[in-house]
Length: 377
Ligand SMILES: [Zn+2]
Image (tube, rainbow, N blue to C red):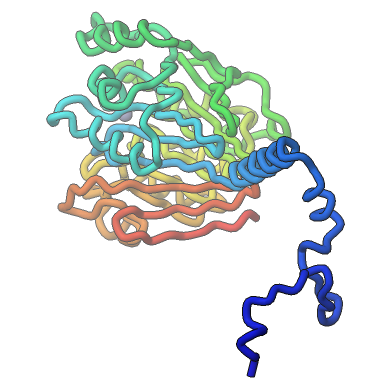
């Protein structure tokens, strides 16, 4: 039993003998050196150490991509490891501000109160949405588009409202080969205003064998704006994701034939909501994506031919969808865990992809929390 008189008697740490090789931190020469420093120097060292650990934490963060449910329109939120953000299209207008509210909810979930780069792929109504309304709820610093609208009919009031608010912000017009300067992830413009990159990217440029055997579909004169789409290639370390917005099959050929200038990707954001006219075998086969994410609605996109084209491509592991496709039925839709919004429900669930510099990535269904991780191959 310890005598009461011994309790509270403090022996000097340095005078005590410690078992084995273990010593108290105070005996460490580095600690002894630190204790002898002046207070200002000590504070500077602590600040430097905190900054270094914050940088390490940032470096470990992921590239996060939210495929937001805008009922067959397009809206994809990107948050880079640096914390900067980009919104690719804003869904539909109307419906009491439904899509703007859904985008704000996704942004809030990502910890964002503003967007750094708002990118409008083209001016069709399911992408242009209601930009003034959205910006009143979620401000943006820069607006990126492909330049003037090229359509047979005069510009709509909606387009005029868009240009009016766009011109008050920092407006950037991009062309193929440009980069959207979001920090922490490389975002290369591969298509814009019916043009595409001419020079193959590093490591790409191999002949695309399907070009010779699969004839291109004719260009649809009614879909001028679709083919004006800004298409983006995202690269984070070894991870690559391609999103061509509403580029149609005829323009897949122009981009991917006779040589593939892009190479392979890990994730393909399926063009034009998975409509038949949007995904050609020359694109899908050459990309060899492991995962396809489809921003379809229950009755828009998700055409049976699209699944056949995607599943016929080498390396495809899974198709994830924002909605169950009524046209696809049980024969074509993936299992329920891979669908954010099931038949007959409208709860605005999203798909969230998180990618690491190692090339590994995961996809999560916000409806039920189902997650699948894809290790880098
Ligand atoms: Zn569209």
